Length: 356
Image 1 (tube, rainbow, N blue to C red):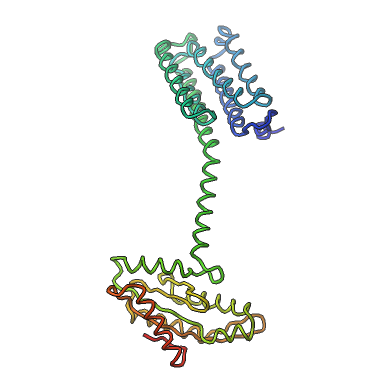
Image 2 (cartoon, rainbow, N blue to C red; image 1 turned 90 degrees about the horizontal axis):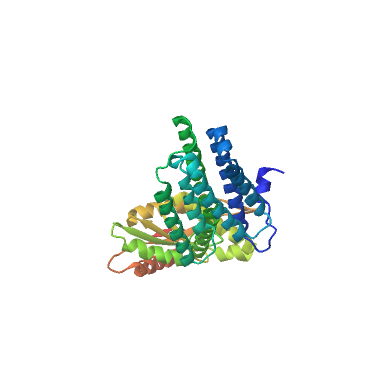
């Protein structure tokens, strides 16, 4: 059985959180490795002087690891916390204050907030207890020298071993207990973005819908940096005939073709929306009527020269546009109404034109 599958094995007790148990197993492995490294660095003298203490703590570490497979999460958690307390106060005299054993209290503090399912008040009480215990440890053991004679280099290696174990534990606790919330938050943000996009987008063409167009018009016309705004409404000529002759499926393909052609021709700066049916709204920010007219004529010519192929059917179409330059005195509604009136003038005068 691999180490990963061993760590991820379910707990025997029902209705227990697996995330805490997995975290405890990983932390027990990290602590066991650090404890073993400390003992090896200290040399045989440490085992000779404190055999019961060292092997007892190593045995307790292994026992709690096995316990994670058979006990409730709460029992395993507090057994590990008690083990860290005992390990710290029993091993500081062995390795000395400089070995950094007292830093393992940070792991206890993090587990208090991340792994415990107690109320917020209890978590702060537990944290206060850890603080008091840390202060007492300083008062009792602060500055204590090692009872084992080792070289300054080995003392630093032991310190590095313990600091590394604490840092690795902090990283693992932070990752394990924040990953799920982070993933869920990312999923929620993506879901909200999708909902927002769907609420503002016409499903058939992929252009913005009328609701979003009205919002954008209000926004762009109130922007003090917009020196000029032009608005156009375009309508596909004789579109009803396409639907009546070839069916609505072909009509949908025509609408999608027109939408794509508008994107290609007008560029990303032009706001495009399906205004309703076969009508489209085009907003040209920072463009006066003359500039917008040139862009619309270009689009109209491209559409007129295009062929739309749907299966064996080839369709040619034209569009008529009504163009109006925004007046800051009359507002966006008046601009849209004026563009709509010019569109109907173009329809009445033979279609396939831009009326400005």
